[in-house]
Length: 143
Image 1 (cartoon, one colour):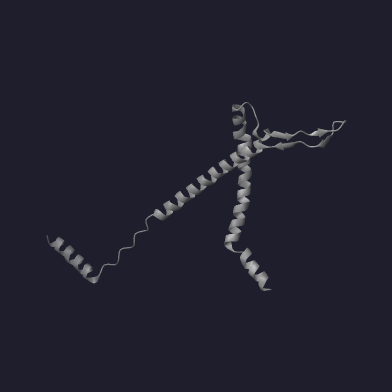
Image 2 (cartoon, one colour):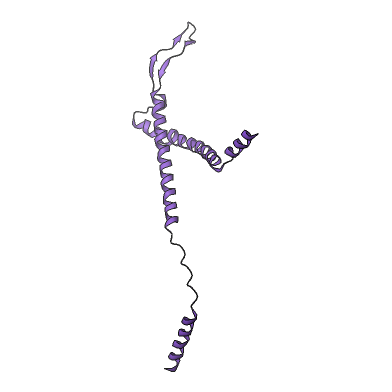
């Protein structure tokens, strides 16, 4: 029984829930970045380097073996360096986006911290101050 209570307390802590939300949002954000890289950034870059699609770049280490009918008996062994380049670009863009978000959040947090506190209300005048104010006003009226 103690183990289940302890596990429940751990699993329902705010930090664990926050982390789970972060992982889910991060996964969705990763898909957006992957689409940005694959569909927006890489086509022009591929065009600049001669129309190559980075994900198709590979070095064949061993050719595939076909039988007499043309069916693949042993698949080719390839080194897919283009897919690696694609992942590096994905990571760089994702890291840049996260950096920009953290920088923006830090800037917003800093502005909130720098806001001056509301001025404290002035204390009520003492009896002497009230009396002196009345004397001053009476003297002004006599002049």
